[in-house]
Every structure is written in C-alpha cells, then in structure tokens.
Length: 432
Image (cartoon, rainbow, N blue to C red; front, side, top):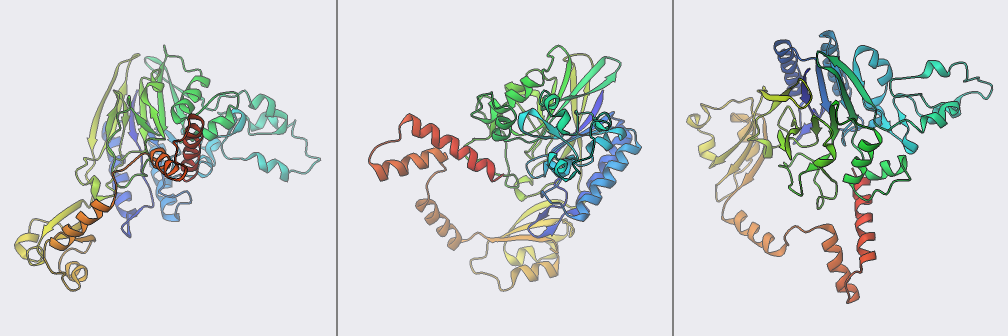
C-alpha cells in the first residue's frame, strides 16, 4: 500500500497581509502531478486543512477542486481536523463522501459518541409524531448511527476512534483517524477515565479503539508530539506552546506501523522514523525559509515493513531574506540573480532610516516585500535594553509560583500546584 502523507495545507491563509491562495492552488496542482507519476493508493491529510475555523469561499472551492481531482484518480482520501479547523465543518457530509472514498474524522463527543454531518440537537426540531424507528436502519454511517434517541444507548458503546479498513496483497490495513483533541473532550467522552494531561487523553483514545498490535495499523493525528521530553523543531507560523503543556509522548502510538502527523510545519521524525510530521506544503513564515517542503510518500508492505521518501515541492514563489544598505539592494547588480516574484524580508543596515523605503523598494523590484527591518547601532542598542529588562522564558507554573510567593510570603503547596497546572491546561486549551 502506497500513500501520500500531507498536512497543514492552511488553505485561505494570508501571510503579512498577502493572500496565499494562488500559491496554494499551484502547489496542490503539483501534488496532483506527483500522484500521476507515483501512483499512490491513498492520500492522508493530517489536519489544518484550512487556516480558519470558518474558511473563505476561495479556500473551500480550492479544497473541493483538490478532492475532486483525487477522487477522479480513484484514490482513497483520509482527512482529519486540526486545531485551525472546525471539526464540525470538516466532518460535514462525511458519510456521503465515504461512498466516494473520502474518509473524514468525525467529531468526538461526550459518552464516546461520534458525529459527522448531523448534530444531536437537530432531533429537537423533529415533530413529536415522527416515528424514527422505521428510519433508524437508514441512518447508519461508517462510524455508527446518526444520533437518534432510539440508538443513543448503543451509540455510547461505539469507540471514539474507529478504523477504516483497506485491503492489499498483504491483507487488511487499518487506518485510524484521530482529530485534534483536548483532554477535556476526552474526559467528557470517557468520564470514568482519569485524564490529567494530553498524553493520557491520547492513550485513552487509542486504548478504547482496541488497536490490534499484530495487525498493520496507521494513525493519522494532529498533535504536538514529543519523544521522552525532546521537543521537535518549531517555527514562527505555528501556534505556540506554553511550557509543553499540550505535548503527547510518541510512545502512545507504539501499536501503529506508521503515524502520519500534522501540526508542525517542518518535515521531521519524532522518536522513531515511522512517527513523522509531513510539514506544510508551502512556507508560511520566514522562519521556514530554510525548510525543504515535500510530500511524504510512504509504502507499507508486510507487518513492520515501512519505507518512505520525500518528494520535493518547489513553490511558484519562495521566501527570501536579504540584508544590506538601501543603495546596495537597489542596484541592478544585486537584483540580477533574484526573482521579482518571490516574497522578501529585507533588513536594512543603514544607520539612518530611509524615507519611504518600503514603497521605493516595491516600486523598484521587490513588489512582494512582506517585511522591512533595520539592523544598526540604534536597533541593536534597543534590543540590548529589551533583553536586560525581560526574563528568560519560563514555564507558566513557574511564573505563577513566583507571584504566589511574593504575595503570600510562602510557596504553593502540592494541592495548589496541581490545581494551578490543571487550570492552566484548561484555559490554554480553550484558547486553541
């Protein structure tokens, strides 16, 4: 079984005010071309399909075109929601699209239930005289019933994560779609479980899914995964993590032959070669300037036999940082090897600010100038002052403990520390 591993499309994203929709259309077409040459059996998109929970019309249309192109090539498509997505909107129509080979992670709800394109709340709009018993058999989807009152008891027994089974020459291959989750959601789904952190939440989901470690299994997930406390490589375009509160240890995925991750924009392994971030297909900040964007092509043969390689993705416009004086950057010799189409971040080293520098630079050559900074005696002095006035980055709990000590003249006890950690986790999670 061969498949493409993609993630973090962020369709509809704007970078420094520049819409990226044309760049995204170009790169998705490039992925289709790679599919024509590599002939994968499936495509897995590990979350952050859109950049906003309510995506633009252009972004939705672009995703629609991409899915149609994949389905026309008879590819199985697997999609999960990320932290930038709305799980409800991503899963809408999932049961209908299942018939076309598009598999979408449903939204995890309380009592272990799942929803795809209908909410339980819709039942309240039904007339009281409506007899649901006759239609109950028609409402079954690939992930269980649609949520009628009559089926609610059975629905509570459905695992929050159910596999999709594919077949190849080596037998069944099970794909588990795990949408972006917060521990509070898993606690609501499984109130009998003691869940205090993100790793425990993921462990519960995997355990309740009854994954057979002897079978061939793939997990598609969108989380901040670490390996024994080692943090992965991050960049500025990703949502920042406070003190590693939302990390998931990679060991919870031991039963899976391959873990297709989304969330971080740099392609990389975590813990072992087969737990991987695909990275975003495009650069979305200058901190990604050195990234080599790619599609991860994975091939799974018999149990434990997994191979992968990176298929390069070359954008229509690149991100580049330039440094020099205004006169240097405005000279024909300097711009000769450059592309006027690229996105630029310029650092001017002039000691005096240049009048109307952004407008003049854009008019001359750098029409896609995204950012302009100065690096001179004045800015370096200001940076030194800021560094002296600030403190090194600390864990949130450390800041709170210091404040508590100053105000009360005594340190926080164990109960207070545990309570504070839980509240920090819940508050931070609610903001995501």
